[in-house]
Amino acid sequence: MTEPPAPRPDPRPSTRQAFRRRRRTKVIATLGPASSTPEVIEKLYRAGADVFRLNFSHGSHEDHAARITMIRDIERKVGRPIGILVDVQGPKLRVGKFQAGRVQLQAGQPFRLDLNPTPGDVRRVNLPHKEIIAAAQIGTTLLLDDGKLRLRVTRTRPDHLETEVVVGGPLSDRKGVNVPDVVLPIPALTEKDRADLDFVLPLGIEYIGLSFVQRPEDVAETKAIAAGRAWVMVKLEKPQALENLDGILELTDCVMVARGDLGVELPPEEVPLAQKRIVRAARALGKPVVVATQMLESMITAPSPTRAEVSDVGTAVFDGADAVMLSAETAAGQYPYEAVNMMDRIVARVEQDPDWRRLTDASRPPPERSSAGAISTAARQVAETIDAEVIATFSSTGSTTLRVARERPACPILGLTSSGATARRMAVVWGVHPLEVNEIHSMTEMVARAVRAAQHEGFATHGDEVVVTAGVPFGTPGTTNALRVAVVK
Image 1 (cartoon, helix red, strand yellow):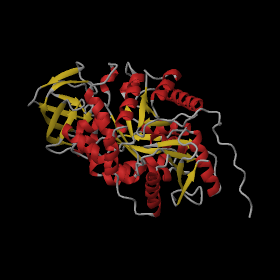
Image 2: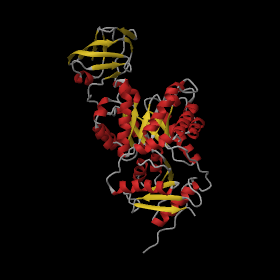
Image 3: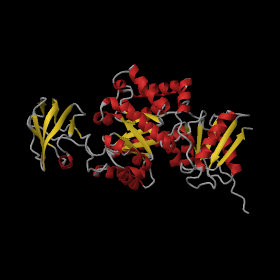
Image 4: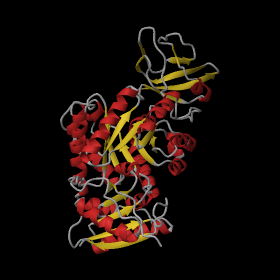
């Protein structure tokens, strides 16, 4: 029997100073005009950003490629894996233009939406989406300009809709249209999105933010394009997606509670309930879930948030979200560093509270009914029983690490992998400190590597115990069947 090759040094040199977060819930920061230099991006990372979001609704391919290069340069500098989320635009449903640029609609007046491209007036406007006209029925609600105006369909024709204005107000060129009552026969990916993905996937990203998802088929199409090169992160922002939640979650890799559009198409009082339902369902499946939109909105123009915003972030942490996200606060706001720093402080403080730990334990989903699920549950239970300092997971695809993160253990998770792509994907996962290491070939080497990594990353010292779990044979995706306890010598 041949001996396994001697282990090579780990990819990161031992002289690198360990850098770790003191919290479990991750932070996503959106990059934009206010945060597009290497200095600002590094400052945001050091302030607490674990993942950076690139919004492909804005900016050129060259702009985004430059930001990806900056992030990877910072990643090498700090010696930590950083995740990149590319948020594709998706279909944008809008009315056409008006002769005077805008009109004032009054409640009770008739208003026509048609396929005629001629600029509109107070009586009609172009709606360049025949799918909406074909799908609408008498009584269908149309929301314009982020829900500020509400129309009800009174008559349908092949080339236009007659509506009554229910809630009036000013309406100007190219304002958005939402149709909360109807499943529209429109794919989640546009030609622009496909071109954007063709451009960005070869550059190496971790997650695709997918808008306008209504059905599981929308997820399947994007996963086929990604072909394993990135995780698909479904943005749940339409009522139809909530009706198909189980099927969508089964297919997607991770999920975002996109409360902006969700709050337009759902009554506002329904949004907190939808958020909790989505977080609970994703956690039960062990799939990372992000809570996003307007979390610290006032910090776009103010150096400190409102107390209600602080409570909103805290609620997401108490619910058990894997990550919380900043959008315009860091992309276009006046205080991007302060926003990330504040988010980091809020999350860290909530997780220090005894009630947070009690609620986390109480909301833990039942164990998965599989040997892999049983091993992951056992890893948490053993760690709690012996008061271990850390659980070390070995996983080529991240599946073992995700299973342990689903358990929400009291100690940190050291996610070891030989795949740089997997290490970066783990940047969004609750409680995981991802670390790229060389491949291992035996259980003895696995335990020794875990102990060394726990020491070097600052999780354990002499005499501390480390729980180690992995799938054997090594490198086989989807297996979690080994559990060991090691003492740091």
